[in-house]
Amino acid sequence: MTITRISSGGEFEAKVGYCRAVVAGGFVHVAGTVGQGDDVVAQCKSALETIGAALEKAGSGFEKAVRVNYYLPDASEFEPCFEVLAETFGANPPAATMIECNLIDPKFRIEIELTALA
Image (cartoon, rainbow, N blue to C red; front, side, top):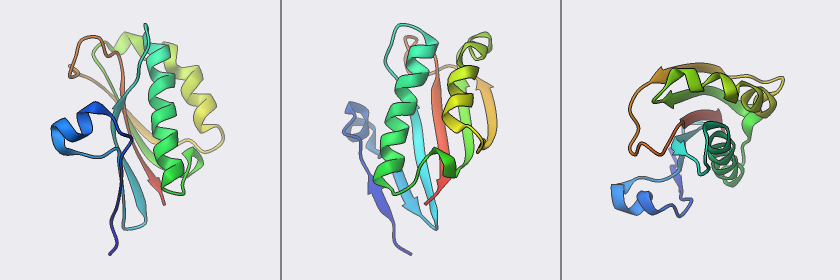
């Protein structure tokens, strides 16, 4: 089986020892991704841009997503992201889970992890 690793060049990839995405076994596994911005919606959009770029490098896209996990330190902040997420996945929504938990830094309001078909 061929394994392809995709880096986004993020500062934590080398520091922590991971890559943005791994293509293996017919799937693209995208690592938990945080975004930049002053609020949860801006961070959600930013994280999705990073994920979209990784999917594109893997020859995939959001329409091939099969699973997505959302991690938020405050579950009440998830609803403002609904419109962005519905627009991103459109007619091809993946199975999804939202978990309330601490993130690596309090400035981050959402982290998104995704699996798609390659």
